[in-house]
Length: 86
Image (cartoon, rainbow, N blue to C red):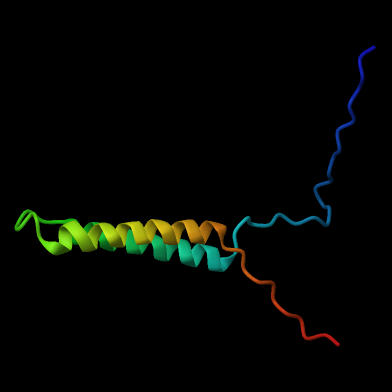
């Protein structure tokens, strides 16, 4: 015999709220990481002095730092707000 699986249905007006996966701090860190990566690529721009210290050393370091910050932004779990009850 075939088994019938019951599907749970939720009502439209139920008390459950949809929540975001990330909090405000995560988005702020992620935007900051995008800015750091953009600054790194801006440091690489140009055709003059192709082998300058800025273009071959500092700019790639800044880009990697920005990607690392993006990784931290994804994994960071903000601390819950303390309630002053009691």
